[in-house]
Length: 73
Image (tube, rainbow, N blue to C red; front, side, top):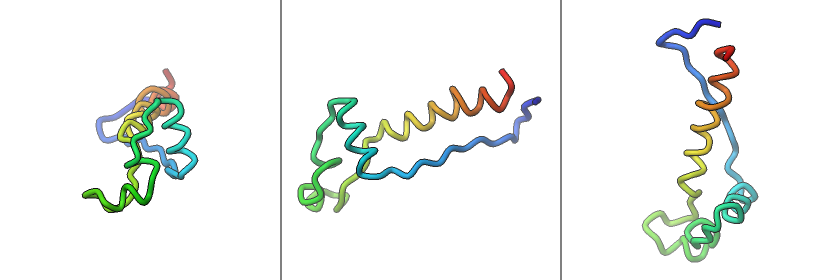
C-alpha cells in the first residue's frame, strides 16, 4: 500500500476504571486525581481524569504499530 499525504489512521480504546488502575500499577503513578473520585471532585476537573500518558501510549500504538502495519512496512 502506498501512503498519501491525506491518509488517516486511528485507534479507539475505552478508557475504563480497570485501564486507569492497570496504568497506575504499571507506571507507579497513584495520584488520587486518577484513582479517587472523592478527591477528584475537589479539583478544577471536578472528576477523575485519566493519566495523560495513556493518550501518549495510544498515539504511539498508531504510529508504531497501526501505521506501520497498514503501510506494509
